[in-house]
Length: 346
Picture 1 (tube, rainbow, N blue to C red):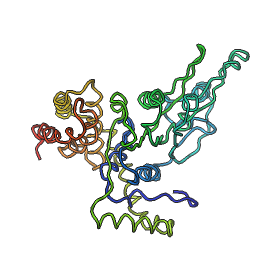
Picture 2: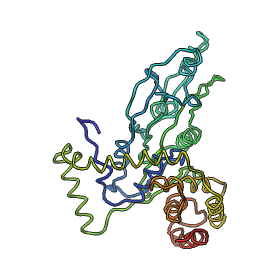
Picture 3: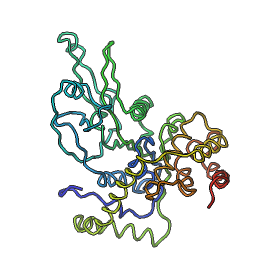
């Protein structure tokens, strides 16, 4: 939160627990692969995305680097920072806040990936790179509203970069790469069209959100929003203790996660579920395992429990149930629950 432009607190969002859980586990383990939030207008999708950024810690980065290469991450450095460190020169560092980088719906490939100045490379013998959105997104949250309205090749580009943590640009036989490690969040209204199944599968988690139908809950949402708009600073100050609790929870979970390893029981259960669903490839297994572990870490446990698998299954599997419309996929979830219960006691 900035003094001039307070962000609606994450802890003040009413309901939408699946959406909040999906964002939190991606913060704890970004390699889960981001989240696609599907729902009608006015269901706090963009509010939640901007709110989660306010909970994230500052990053120690190399000063003046356009990609904000992170200190200690020698595996993920841009060419300039790698050359600087390999020369033996000690880089200067600074601390910056993580932020939400938004991708315009009309963005072109060059705007997203960046461009190479071919003429400069030929005449000067040195690569000159003009950074795009993926450069700004490195180390941050990349937010794509109405992701289903983007050209498929742009979505492919985003998902490839998110999966590899690197953006590759090639023009006329000249190539350049830079780190692009970000948490990808896409939102969409299903009434405006869906993503191809191949692209859906590339999002680690998927959540469906709906407006609250219960009168008391809906009234509470309106009341809180009006209070925030009346005095944002006072509203945020009221929720700051709860915000700090979530920050501490995220920090502890990250520390616990470093020491955790999925056991054979979790791996075997994930495989059983994927075989039962008949999903293609192994992405569902891997995402399911990572998400289950992240939920345990968020609960400050180093032991995986049945409840972790149940929550992970609801986020990582429905959008991968091929040959079944989503309504039928929800009916099938009882059977998935039984597969989990066979291995994990309640």
